[in-house]
Image (cartoon, rainbow, N blue to C red; front, side, top):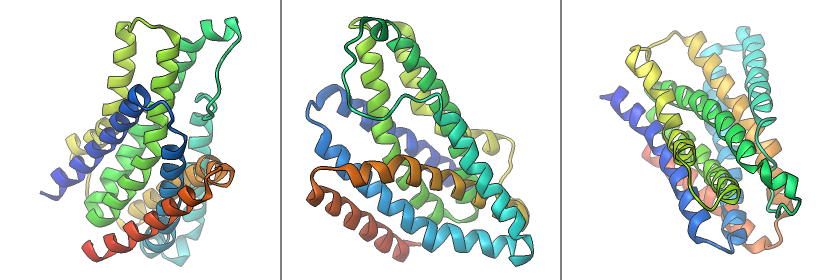
Length: 251
């Protein structure tokens, strides 16, 4: 039962991508929505690390294995840094150079491939975390999922700009992106990998912590400090705190 619920949590991550796709299609003035989402995800992930991931990782690894905590945290950071090199800048700008427009589909494909790998790793980490702690896994999926909404918007907008006619690979990219986190959870689920020793659990939590730190420091924080509507940003930050606070009573 717990395994099925953990797998379902990874499936939920794909729904956030779908939300991003829908916004890209129908929302013309999306800046305020994105400002709120960035601030919401920022506060949620910061509090998630402080209140849940960090204490959990230290508890499972114990002080004698702090070298593993540091090692896997750095690995998480480096892994997402490498993947992020293939993702276009997450900024709203119009490409006016003809040569750039001819490469938009290529950029979109590279970004999608990187995000698929990125999401598969996240899906595996969240599945295994959820097997150990459903409440923590669910809050992780919400925080990461909120970050995936803007990425869904960016990828969809990039692919949309490349061609008014939608080729098969366009839908294949979006479809693969939507199910990628679920595929990540499906791998350990099918291999019946859910019960691991304390050191492995702690190392996976540290790896996930490193991934989330990368998202917070290099993706979300720059967006939050550059927002023009500070009231929207503050509302997003407060909402993120409240969601995690209320979620702690559920778990």
